[in-house]
Image (cartoon, rainbow, N blue to C red):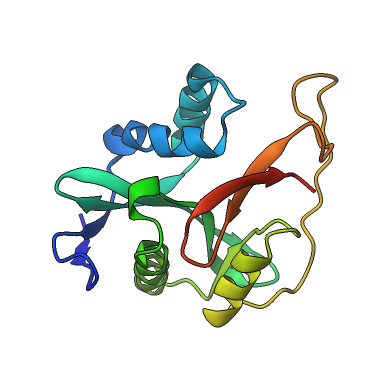
Amino acid sequence: MIAERGPLLPEMMIRLLAKNELAMTLPLVQELNPGVPPDVLAQRLQDMSEEGYQCAAAFADDCCIGVAGIWLGTRFWCGRYLDVDNVIVGPTYRGAGIGQQLMDWVESYAHREGCEVMVLDAYVTNHPAHKFYQRNGYQIIGYHFVKSLRSTGLSTSPTDSMTEVIDEDGAPRQEPWV
């Protein structure tokens, strides 16, 4: 496994989780998805791991304090890419630059994996995240469209669903999904 120490927390280490360690991310993921039952999140994580999902995690004193999901793939328009999925920092550690350190680690990982680009989604209302990602060299080049295929369960209405919003320090908060 790959490990690095962060400058703001001397005891902090960031590394790629093994498949059998992914479940330790569920408490952080639950914070961002309070309306999704824990057993559903656990099943989704299992399904995702079988589809190639990986996760980098930040640790302080053997405690998982932040995560960044990773999808690797290849697309016609960009070649090999890394898709950053759900950067989450625990409430106690927000504002300490851990989100930035996770993004730096993931970018280094993308280089090692031979990726040509990194991509991510940010909700249109998440202006602090837009600034954070733009400061990190990301450009807004398109829209991500969603169409629900369920008659119940998944809502695309901003008043019916709350979603994660990551501020510039990697701190999540809940906002209506727009």
